[in-house]
Image (cartoon, rainbow, N blue to C red; front, side, top):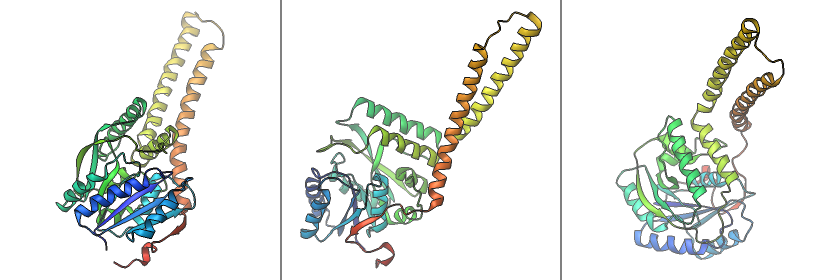
Length: 315
């Protein structure tokens, strides 16, 4: 078993792979640990896979998993954790926004007895105001509506103990939200702070559409507040409708001061109908996720790898 595994999800990162590996190698030489680098190619459309295979030829500690298509960042990280052999594992993206030099500090914290040490961002360079604002809003909203303590201003950049990895491998949800799962698992957790750099090369694979889907995965995986919201809204709208009926009867039978027409009726129908559609949509999101997990399809499909199957690895 290795001392340390470094999990690196890759999606169109050809411009970053060589520099990332050089910086990682420099850090590992200072740390004097037995390491493996697990690159997970998540259906890249550039020559990322060729560059990874080039590293394999000259560096025996480099491993790779090549997906048959793009399955998503969280699934790529989960695959790396499935196959890694380290006593602990660092998760780091290839865009060099998270400095590899911080791994030494993460590792030292882990050696002090913490099972999870995550990197907390003080600042985020090279990102738009809208992205920073939406990220800040999401994490603080998620913190309020969930029953577990998910740290704010953090990504997946962290080190986790083998005990945590083994538990994660028993949580095969289709809609992965790893930072929430790791918080849910527990154990001793701490953090270190750092300033996040600007992306070195290329463009982020996290579009606003993917960010929205990721946010939905996080909320539906760790909170039933949207379902409660639908229920409470239904009661509130029913109460408003009841008082509106009483008011309509009063106007019609007592004051006889009313204007025949359809405006108020249409307003009420559209309002109640909108609430019903919102509620059905919320319930549908949960049912859709339940359906995905019931199908029990594999989380990912490998095109090729230079690693053994997880159940065939020797300790």
